[in-house]
Length: 116
Length: 115
Image 1 (cartoon, chains in turn brown, red):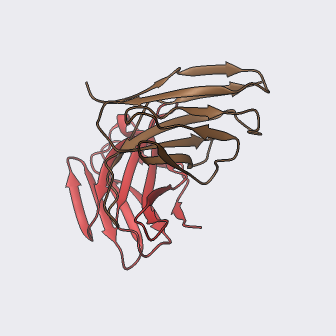
Image 2 (tube, each protein chain N blue to C red):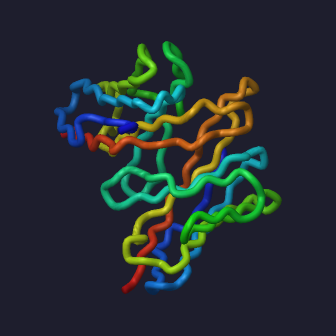
Image 3 (spheres, each protein chain N blue to C red):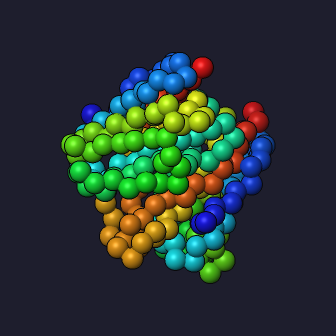
């Protein structure tokens, strides 16, 4: 089965600890994305990567870091510098589009992070 | 800041009726438009994509795009209780001259189908 997996589904951490969220895809997609969703709000882009070993900041990158060492994997680290880390984190992937055309983006099941 | 606006709802529709969801966007250069369905506590699921002006039908779903009015809509015919969810509109925009594209999401419209 092709798809995107995220682990764990639920994650609890103490304030001040870094935590890494896993995202793996076997769709052979070039582009991968991390979003954050807060209650009653739309998805906000944290980081994205269009090719291996390259990634760009999204709209709310402060307090987060990523790596893209393999095409299939795009882990997100939530650092202690992130002021409000409690949220629903979503990983997505897509075929890399040509200029002006953006292809469908598919989401993993998400990780719900709670920091106390 | 590129914007995507949706009525937050909630929108209540009787079972069997047509549900109409609307979305407007600010970037005239946008060319790719998507509708996602999100059940409570779950991740978004792509249900429609549309790239050209006009209508695109897929089963009970019809997406309508009007680039001149910067408007995209989703119609759900013969609404079922299983259609009760939040519907997210997403629009692409170009962030650099090198072709980098991103999606901007609306905040979603919560739809409830009443049996």
